[in-house]
Image (cartoon, rainbow, N blue to C red; front, side):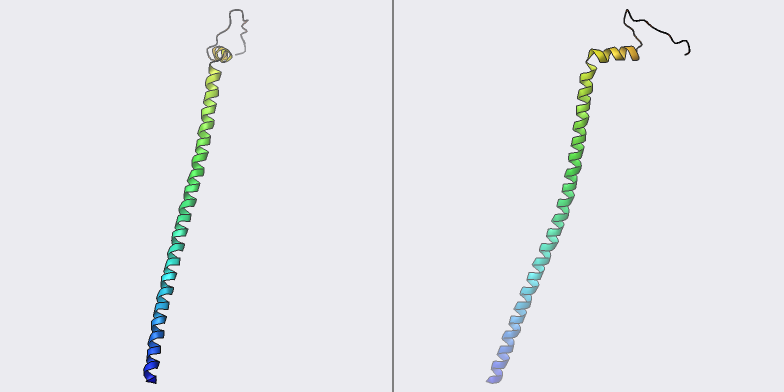
Amino acid sequence: MKRNQGNMRKRKSSKKKKNFNIVHVAAFAFILYFLVTFSDQQIKINKYNSQIDMYEKEIEAKQDLVEYYQNKNENIKTDEYIESVAREKLELVKPFDIVYIDSNK
């Protein structure tokens, strides 16, 4: 009888060890899966954040360009700009302006 009880105890303890090992393996697999998934998501988040920064800088540059052209467009409509273009590019003069000609040229 004692032998039989000893064998029974060994069987129960080996079953407990197998169950215990299966639980450990399952927990380890879950933790490993969690860590891999977490690191993969962190890499993606960093990638997306860098893209967001790049696009924000690009938007800022485009807004500066829009502001530059709006100012230039407003400046083009002024009489001073039209007169300066007429004098410099078209070489026009006002009716009572005195024109000096450089003979050295």
